[in-house]
Image 1: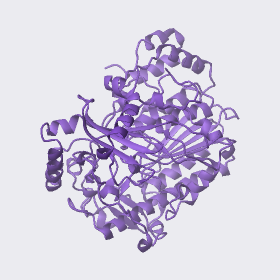
Image 2: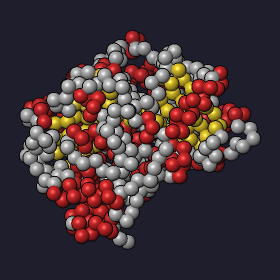
Image 3: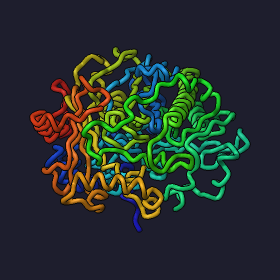
Image 4: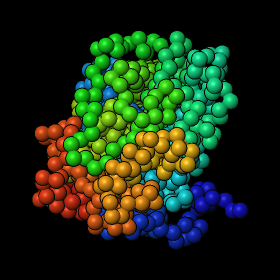
Length: 582
């Protein structure tokens, strides 16, 4: 077999303009549905690639020493982190280091991912393409299957002379992208300096028992068995777990890159389930004082296809396979989530301190983002993959030295596809022609600006799917049979004339749009997009927690918002924005 097209592209770049004509014959295209409903367009690469590559060929050598016009980039991703941070007004969260970063940059209070699931949201942010264009809707699809020649965010920096390094979870696990990196940093083997290597992330002997022979990714795990308990509180150092070692490795990468212009991507695994953190971070919180979700019931008049079955949590060995999660268990789970957030906060602080100690902070852009939001008991769910605000909204902090907005919050609507063009502008790099987002640099200069009129998120129906976004396999369906039977009956009652498991497994999607005041979610069979299966509208002025779906009582509002959604993301761009790619 020949080389993957992505690697062939790298060779074309190195080979020069003579071979460019071979590259520019290929176009990227969004699916037809994105054209007709979401306002997507065919992405023309030919002239744009030529312009971008001219810059590459004339650009600086890889890893050239940083200058005022070529800042370093520290790019921090945190798995399953919702805005549960002090700088977002969550007073019970103890996050002094991320809050310190927020004071040095701009906090985007209304930032939205394009699909609230690990692989789709990372593929979208890192390519600058929306899910309709990436073709990535669950955790097993590599974005290059549909877009083999797309230039990723780190790859673009690499092509323009940056030394790109990665450690931890940036692309989704097992779906990394070799063309993006100059170097994949190798972490110290877990077990050094801590003597015991964790098993499936666990250190306590009672949690390791029974998991010693269960390899990650086994059929037993895929069926929802053998994953272990939902939490662990062990009196161990930070390096006993993966994220402490990730921080150590990132620090070593900084120390070894003083004379290079670097793009360092650091991906932390927590607070993803299971909620595992050293005991000292659990001890920061008094569980009796924690404020748990007040809206634990499903929203009034919400369709069952939009509700999560919480299978990611229920797969844990100590969690019920169906029925409600009790208040004491919910409180303990929240305690564990917050302990993990504080554990990650400490690792972020260590890396920021290393930048300062090496004299790099004044010429380094720092971006911190959580890949999507997360339900902590809201609407009776634990996990992600719903279109509710609490899953679609995620933290985004950008610290760019010298920007007038530093230390302030920007309330304008922004999207994760905007991160790619923002970093390009801050680093004075050309914009690749395929991007579907818009630079937020104007908000870094003036956070008070009104920005996009809408942000767009989508998700397959989470009701009948497992936590990786895929339909349930036979083993998992059997393991959760009572719960799945209940959920199926509710959906059949909603769609009595046309229900089939194949339809809901393969073709049903919720398309969600957040405006300044409302959230619309339009559920449809993608083969029949003009006939909604259900519609949700939430009024954030009067109902910020999305407890009542007002769509049944608001037909005119539904029509208005539906038309705006059908106009698509291009028409949601701010009037004062500079031109984007056609």
